Every structure is written in structure tokens, then in C-alpha cells.
Amino acid sequence: MPQDNVMFTSNLSNLLDGYVKEQRAIGYKYIKGASLLKKLDIFLEKNNLTEKRLPKEMVLLWTEKKPNETDSTRSGRISIARGFAKYMVRLGYEAYIYPAAAVTITRYSYVPYIFTEEEMRNIFIVCDNYPVSNVSPNRHLVLQLLIRMLYGCGLRISEALNLKRHDVDLENGILFIRDAKFGKERVVPMAKTLTERCRQYSHEVHKYEYLILTFSHLLMVDIIRKALYINSLEIYYGKLVFPIAVKDQDFMI
Image (cartoon, rainbow, N blue to C red; front, side, top):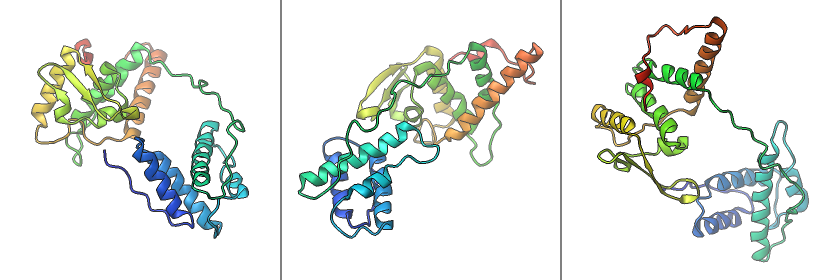
């Protein structure tokens, strides 16, 4: 997988670049980490750091909690600064290492939202009746298959969006998930109905290399929002208010 090339410009640019290269050399993709280090790089340059060191006051100022920032996000910035400082110290430079126990976060405070069957049904309704786009003529086809892959195979959104034609075994109904979280790979079986949908999709848009085209996460949020709104109207009025006839088999994955 191609890695983002980040250009550092502060007085510590060569050290920042060296740290990123070291992290990637030992197996990390380090894309988000490099992005955070670039923010540190901009901060150091803006604050006129002229010495080859990472002073305590700079570290504490950069790791201060920002307005509306979650503890988890701040902890990520602290971790990046700590790792880079340790790298500098190993090379003989002076750097303040943020104490490991100074900030703690609750790792399992997140409560997932579980969709009801009716809510999922309405999400499928919105996806299956999404309008055709002149700009992206296959968008409605992508959406119908994408939502079923997420629902039927338990894929992460990034995993589904990164699928290519050669990752989908249309004969045996198998997905090959490559370069997933932590660089791992896995094989995911599909239901027969989903496999058939993949065959139909491939037949209609076979001229494209990617099975799933580039898709907006914001569009997915908008679709779910519409589906939940439809569901709330159904609960209020006691009937289906979406003006489209829907059959149960339309929701088979």
C-alpha cells in the first residue's frame, strides 16, 4: 500500500523524517502518525524553535487539551510526542519525554448503537431507491451492494471501499480482505444471495477496475439519517410513509 510522503520543514525536520522512516521500516504504515507529526512540525516552526532539541515547554504547550477535544484524541497526540522524544533521546538529543501515566483515558466508554430490524429495513429502502447521478452514473448500484457487504460480511467501511475485482471470488463467493487493520489479511465468505448480487454488479460495471468505487462517508451518514427519520415517522403514524412499494425479498443480502 502506498504511504503518504510528508514534508517536514522545522528545525527538527531531519529527525522527524527519520522517526517516520524508522516506524515504517519496522512494519507500521504510520500514516496517521506522520500526519500528527506534521502538525507538531508546523507548531515548532511557528514557535521559532531554532535548536536541535525538544523542550518541555514546547511539548506541554502542544499537548494541551484543545476546546471540544476528546481525551482519546489528546492522548494520541501525547503518545506521538512521547515516541518522537524517545527517538531523539536515543540519538543523543535533548528532548522532554511526556510521562506515560500523566494522562489516562477510559478505553471502553464508547457505547455502540444497535440498529433494530425496522431501522435496517429503512436503510435498505433508502439505498435501493437512491437516485441516479449524472456525475456518478453507477453510484446507486455501488450503494446497493456496499450496504449489503457491510451488513452481510461485517466489513469495515474502508475494507469494502478498497476491494478490487480480483479480491472477489464470484465463483465460490469469497472476499479476500487485504491490508486491513494492523496490516492483516483475512478471507470472508458471502451468502449466496450476496454473491449473486456481486455477479450482477460485476456484469453491469465490469469496465471498472474496482469492485467498489470511491464513496463518501458523509453520504453514508446522510443515508442512515434519512432511514432513521423514515423509521420515526412510521412509529409516529403507525404505517410506512415512504412512498415506494417494497417487497421483503428486496432486502435479502
